[in-house]
Amino acid sequence: MSIEKKVAQLIDTLPLAEKVGQLFLLAFAGNDYEYAKALVKYYHVGGFYITDDNAANPKEATNLATMLQQEAALRACDVPLLLAVDQEGAWGILTHHTDLGPGNLALGQANDRALTADMYQVYGEQMQQIGYNTLLSPCADVNANPNNPIIGLRAFGEETVGVAHHVSAAVEGANKSGNLCCAKHFPGHGDTQSDSHQTLPIVDKSFTALMQQDLVPFKAAIEQGVGLIMTSHICYPQIDPKNPATLSKIILQDILQKQLGFKGLIITDSMNMWSMRHNYEPAEAAIKALEAGAHIVMLSEEHYENSTTPYKEIQAATILGVIDAVKNNVLDEKVINDRLQQVLVFKYRHFADSPTPTNSLLNKASDIAKLAAEKAIKVLRNEQGLWPLNTRPFTLAFAANPQGYEKITNDRGIGPNDPLSAQHVIVSTLQQRNTPHTLLSYQQLLAALNSDDFELNTPLVLVTEDYPLPGESFDVSEQQKILKKAIDKWPDQLIVIAMRSDYELENHPQLKTYICAYSSRAISAEVIAKLL
Image (tube, rainbow, N blue to C red):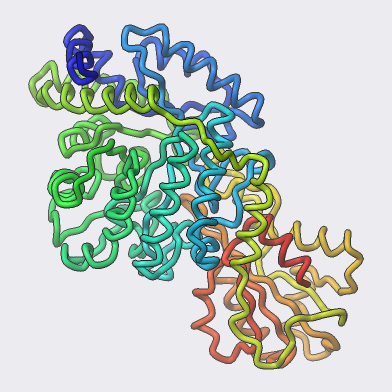
């Protein structure tokens, strides 16, 4: 008997609540493991979104994964859970214990397809080793808008063909690991002016424009065999004037499945992001997403909801709301059965056939990460011949307000999640190597910029930084004001090192020396410090 027939027979035996629960991927706060097990046992959930908030080291993570999968194996529908993580480079978990490399934008700049594939195989293998089986990556977004507040370093770049090239490589590498991966955020989050964690963005693009730009990397991911695609909470009024992508049958079924030929699972972006919460009731949004074509509804309890609202009650109300909608003939049970059929066939098949890498990269992971960071660094301007510094002493300052560094890790494990800022790594590495330099504190830098008496007798290395933070922003605009003042005050002595994208450069035509790492990750900061 085929797997399809076996699954259909299983679905016929399942109560409605068990069928609906399998279509949800939820999160839980901290180490509330009893609640997590209750979600499996009583709400029959199909998976979890996991962060450092749930497990702070590999041992805890493995214990958590084992415990959850054992609970799932006791159910009538014993298919393994999806244990999903935002392991994508610029974002990641267990940053002290895994090798994230410099992130996607840097990989795009390194422009080595094999290196990108290797980096994603590392992500997948390291997560497989722990017990987390689903990468919520790669980002397949194109940085069409350089001022996009949430993608930036998470994308492979702004050139459509190049992004598609690396998305394909990322999927290939992740698939080699045996881990599932997920291209996101369909049909593209790279051309927005706002962050969907905070509001509902609108992108006024035609279908033709999308096909020529934003959809190309998703097509590459599909052709490479990506298992999941994540929706975006973005309105495309020229394509669907009524619904954002997550709730749009036109976008999910007509375009993603029929036009692009995607046969895998469609998972929503987190349904408690403000783009959803401010515009739809939780159960209403879940129902609309399932009707539109989503197979899995994700609630990842972002930091701005978990700490301020009764998230457990919202999770329960959302699942029960879908069950009630079926009971009250608001939602056709055929929708539930159809989505579940695809989910279970996909999962049973994947977990039966999931390969073990014949060419494991676990022993080479740190070397791959370092090589990616090194290859990404570019000298974009050097009009004064100040770079490389060689042995001359220099003055070092950072344009970012250090108070902002706490934002990197305050998101319950969502986002960059690295307690070591670029500044910390650069300063400590220079001290360890006894590199002759003078360090200006943030306050000393501000004072020097506003003083007529301050004399600069060495080159000034000024570091700019950016971190893609969900729901909030790093102080990029304030850094640009500082940078402009520095250019005006010390035009021939200034060296700018960007621990970020190079998108700031076009705003400073007078800047003469500019080196870009395309990353704010610790590994890139370490390489930059050694170059200094």
